[in-house]
Image 1 (cartoon, rainbow, N blue to C red):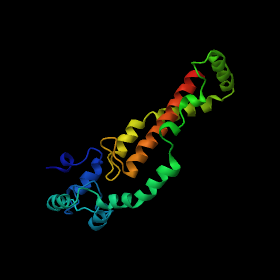
Image 2 (image 1 turned 30 degrees about the vertical axis):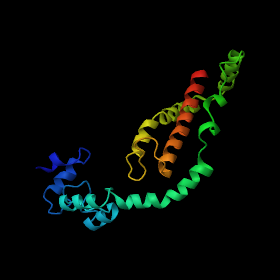
Image 3 (image 1 turned 180 degrees about the horizontal axis):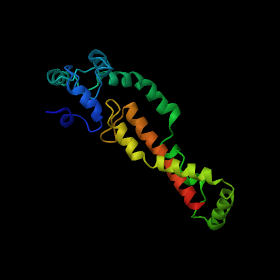
Image 4 (image 1 turned 60 degrees about the vertical axis):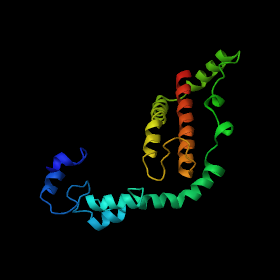
Length: 190
């Protein structure tokens, strides 16, 4: 098969052409063998990507990148302590967007919204542009959560995994989601 038919769509065609004549066993990988040696690549990934050795490696370990998982696991006790003691308030203890916005269930809600709009009137347009950008970023959280769930050692396939990283990922995602909700409602009301 040609290099272009078996490699990633993200690999530049000029790089593929350069590697096509290479005799290196890395010639079909997305790593440039003229920059990273096979030994360096194996040290980074902890896996040799030849067909035979990759199959053997996956039989011995559940992870494609065991060295990455080792680093993640080394940090797990610290993450566990930080999630519980410092970083995230969850459940009833967590703040909610409505804590910072006019309560629309109150009788004076119209007046409260008018007050909010008066305060927002002095905010420069440039700041509103930044707030909209921040809101869009915060609302992209499903993408971030999905990405975190692809990392070996951090994955949370059912949303109930009790590992430190899974609990941090869920807590962080809910915190960021509240940021997006607050920005969205503030921009809507102002």
